[in-house]
Length: 453
Ligand code: PHE
Image (cartoon, rainbow, N blue to C red; front, top):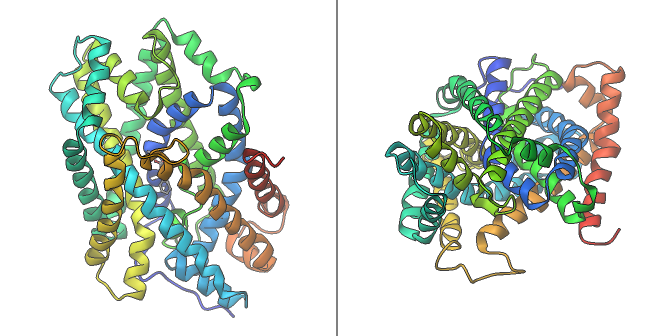
């Protein structure tokens, strides 16, 4: 008989609290900043379609697997993988998968914090009316000016990292849970207002068509890899964040239903952000493929021209900051949980140490927009490399291995026992997806992107 475990870090107060926290982790800069800019880079509609297919067929089944493993192991990903491997008499090296996740978490957080810093900067700019009634070109220069200043980027990067460390220090319930409860719905409402505004602009039709009319001639292997990477990034999968949150999930909560709610909420926010942004891109004659700065240029132009734009704009960046905050804490949590478990550190110390590592790694991203702009590998800056390596390689690879562990290594009886959806059609569909479709899907997209198939 297996002993019932509880996490030493505490537990969510309910299934609902878990959904909020996991949605808080999923919804972030990935939806509002990254989704539109990557969609623009890879040509729109066909990319969006592949993205949605990746969410449904690859990411959702893997998310169920990740939550399931977390709840069964009840520890940080490194120790969860170790304990589960031990329990099922499997190779203990599976714990390295936990390490891969911790490293990916540091790398993502390092550049995530820099972009969240832009948001912080923009709160003050929008608040002081810097965007109101100025020419589009002036707004472009505001963004370029920000990127050109390492000092300003460092200040906001440091501030944001400090905010992340503070919440993680406070622990599972008091820190993580409280932050998400009303901020998520507020963000959603503001996004709907922005969509309303976008609908009234002349570029609405063109923007809408850009998002939803697939032009497959624009879809490359590289674009498909980016769509899959975005699905992992946006749903916080493949690096142990959701596994860690799953380890705090009460035993009686339904993993299938929670996964569904999180994925739907996350996808809706990304699509809404797309519908809010692309019409503006076309209305103002901007380029959809203008890269990471896309929302930091389009949205301020809109805020500058709409009624009450100063208030709406400030509110928007405040909420975006919160969305980023509830995601960044989940990037740090796996490493912190491990430090508390294995290094006997107090939570605040562990959070401080982990935050410091990510902060140092982030300095490279700060400099890649100015002093280190010309230091490139395959034409990518340090920031581009961090972003590409984590989203397109580490997360899908982590997800692939998790899927293999959960469905090929762990016996069927263990997943039946933990998922609690019986042996019926639901379970069989899940098992088919994680066992065959998801791993083959990830592999095919990998091989296709490097030109092997
Ligand atoms: N899902 C988050 C977002 O969309 C980012 C993230 C990735 C968080 C991986 C945790 C793990 O912004």
